[in-house]
Length: 271
Image (tube, rainbow, N blue to C red; front, side, top):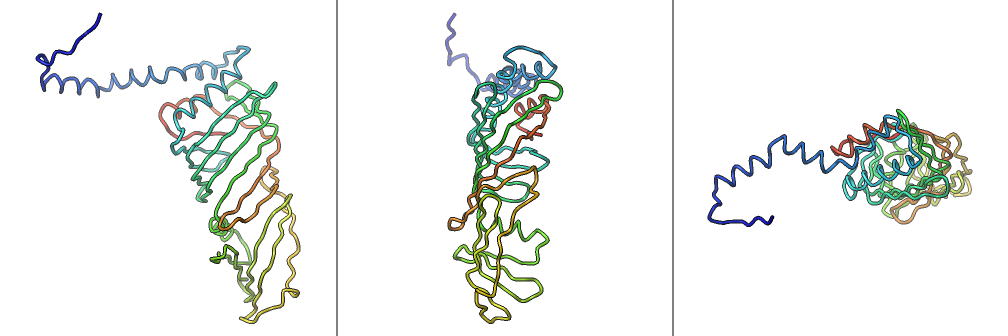
């Protein structure tokens, strides 16, 4: 049956009453319940419900839920014990044979306190094992991104190094030894875990030192966290573009916490 609006029956008092009902707590709770009812299967799956399509349902629910809630917005997460703040641009999940592949694109990212301009994470061979907690395994992960030279130098200066680093207008790095009064202007790159330093100029006590007297042997980057491998890291202007590869990883998460984060917009806790 159609209902028509009668302007003669409308009054300011009725408008006030409608406003009160709109902001009534019980009404808000009902609205939240209805509009987020699509995430209820996560709770059921977290209790151990078993179906043949459960991994597909889990991946679909998680990816669509997180993207619809946080897409284009800043997301806060705890990942591998680190605080991550970033704007979620893309979250895609596709089935690849018996497993899944996921692609995540983040911008304006902060890893703990360190800014990263953009990151693309592709996880291969993703498997989900429902339970309490739910486990996730990946065969390998590729991470590509870009950060400013200034951000990289800021992070390096927090490490226990013998050199203090600063960025020149050219984008090159000036390194001053903390005790030997030696300073060098350099560029650097990484290929297949091998760090190569290209020394452009060197000074000792203000006197120019011939480059042939300054040795900068390649440095193998062994023992990186999570057995990571740096495929490459190269400077382009004031940016450093990099690719990091991670081997098989296993972790877990609490579906109830993920559901709560999607509904309320709070921190996601992953691994």
